[in-house]
Length: 472
Image (cartoon, rainbow, N blue to C red; front, side, top):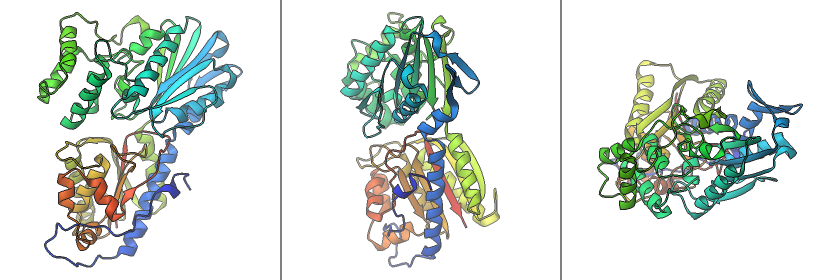
């Protein structure tokens, strides 16, 4: 059993809504649905275990006779005077614990920043908790300390950088004269307008002293090895955590294009717009490109990703008796539309047996986007689940789980939610209106009332989201 499995809350408590015209409709076959819900939780928890950050580092890295092996790549630790460890991300503390165990007394010094409550006991590496997804002062202080540690490294030193999802928000070091407040406001605007993570990160890079390859710029000519757990669709190295150790192909022009695309120029801080315009005019150097010589001694390795979680989920679902299909690890776009697409596939399975015969398990990963319309509380996984629950109200024996692999969904303490074909019927009988909650982006409080929140706590990893659709 996964160490996270016993943390998932009971998902068989009554659910509720009043979007139907009649009340007191009796739920069907809830016992069978409860068994399927447990299957979904088991699949999710096994997927989490497969991409645990501590295990990911140990599976890819080892030291033998003073040689550090990272898969087929190797470095002789005895050639370096000092070995420093730096990093940022929701899973970086767990990564740090594994590196401490592997390198032991080879570590000279280190500092890592993580999201609040995503800690892990460390011995030699300093750990700082900071704000995510909106950066805070703790993040800025730690980013500055990381930069100073990187700058003190010399030619014969080794720096190991541990990056995981959330690293962008956890390394906030605005380029003067920009302030942390400017960056906070910009990120809030981008999150609320529906900008993709790639678009958001292009702006982050060009507002920063540390992102978009600038951290590697500061470490040169030391040797820099970055271990990465990806939380971005397709695993583009320059996008994960805004690519602090990777050459950047985006430009100041791209930043302005994003601002015009979403028509937010009048909402943005004046200083940010002025900063980007100076970049366009050549008054500020752009981020270092992929061909810059500073990357000659920089090596980046992905050691964990969404497809690994899906592969583990597929294996366990098959063992539970489901015909299993991995739909994609690259689902993105509007959460509302993504939910409809998944329920359409579930209905097709029920009606025609395509693309697989029931009992069926359809798995997908990626990261969708919620466009905020209300002032409620929730996240993309809870919004996905609530939308899906409305879609499958007239179906039978369907269960859908949507959860963030880091254990959090938006600004909530839930990983997501789990629903079934009785969820809305029971909600109706309880006098709740799911449509009202959905329109107010308040899925968290809806599922809090129905008992359908998926609670895991911090999982020690972050490889985007995992969605599980079961049909019997």
